[in-house]
Amino acid sequence: MTVVIFPVTGGGGGATPTLAAVLAAGNTTGANDILVAVAQAIDAAIAAGTLQLGTGNAAIIAMGNPNGGLGTFELFINQGGVALHGSNSGIQYSSTVANRAQIRENQYGANAGIPGISTFKSRGLTVGSLAAVVDGDSIFRATAVGVCGDNVSIPLSGLISITIPVGGSVPAQNWIATDFEVQLVPLAGPINGRKQTFKVDSEGILYVREAANKMAGTAILDGTGTAVVLNTRVKATTKFNLTVQDGGAAPTGSVYQSARVVGTSFTIKSNAGAADTGVQVYYQLWEPTV
Image (cartoon, rainbow, N blue to C red; front, side, top):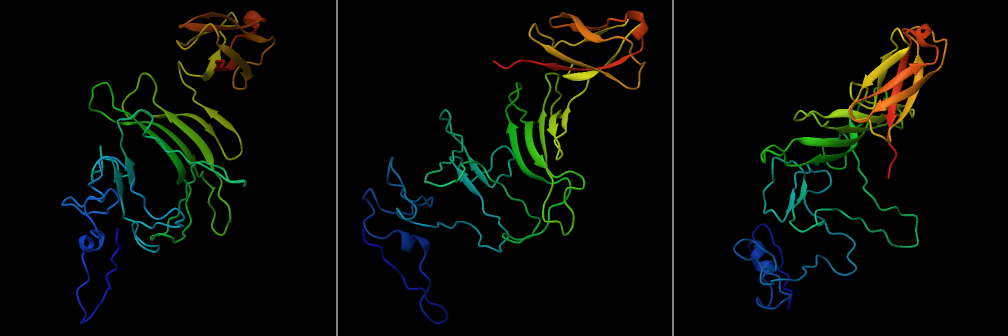
């Protein structure tokens, strides 16, 4: 194949050649030719093969807007030039092959490089410009979306985020504080009903969801020193953490988990009986992993 380089002239010189004229260099039937078809497809004549961008030792392939631009370039793979299902993602890849719609980063070399996903956020208005993030900004997020049972709805169904807490971004400060958060949709929904299920804040304090039928909550001992807590998540394997809290009666005995009904409830008791009426007990449910 012969590569033809056209001189680019301006002013009173000849016209700048078209993309088709530059790319349609050499034979148009060989397996390695670069073609521009009516639909602007490159290497359209190859039924199955590899189009290599750059050479075996190419250092950089630049696509889209240059540094300092507005960064509006989009890349679609296996879906034409159309964004699907209302997504605004700049890179979209679609596949019907099992496990193909994944991103894998491969690290080689005798070095300390770590494979993974790295993100960066600046409030600068152009690509490459720096402007400080602010409290509440998420600097990393993994988003999960799926088609619902009605075969129509596609709400956000789960989020994993690293977010800047209140006071985490301070003018002239050369670090930002971060929280880690997981949002999930409960079995009862509703659509877009994501709840903060788990969080570790910048100081290492653990947050879990407290509500009826959830992992954690509080119970008040009755006139017999007993509290029956309704919770359909109780299993034969469930473990319970119990601690007496302020805000209720002062305990005279010790509290313990005395019974359970799988799928229905568990019972908290005090060995002091009626003497511990009104004691407030915090509980957490835990399940062993398999």
